[in-house]
Length: 184
Image (cartoon, rainbow, N blue to C red; front, side, top):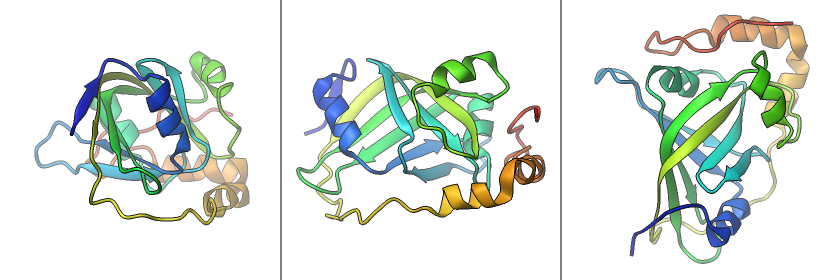
């Protein structure tokens, strides 16, 4: 049932674009470090090429994905069909964070809607694309996107997010470097 693909073709593109949630997993090199798995939503995922994808990394309580990518680049993104035909799709690759103070950020940002609180764009060069049956994934209905994260970012404002980033996003729970310089 599982199949590997050479690239993201139109059928896979359609499948990815139809999903309202995706999951991102990373891990540090240290065997005693913490593996991270994060759910993502909103309109934050883009296919930039047949083997290149990116997503907006909006403020959160931790900075594990960015820290792990800085250390080793390994990442997997997973999409599950919660409606319609069953399918799980995994995109394995090497990722890198691009932060707002970097020149490339503005070019990448043009592919996305603007979300207050975007701390980076994660760019992934995909090395393996594969699916599996997803027979055990339940059928679920999307009611709506949650407004909590955009509202939280808006309430904090630019200065509040800057302080939060300095306090909470400088390093991972394992002590790896997270976000870099704060800029105005």
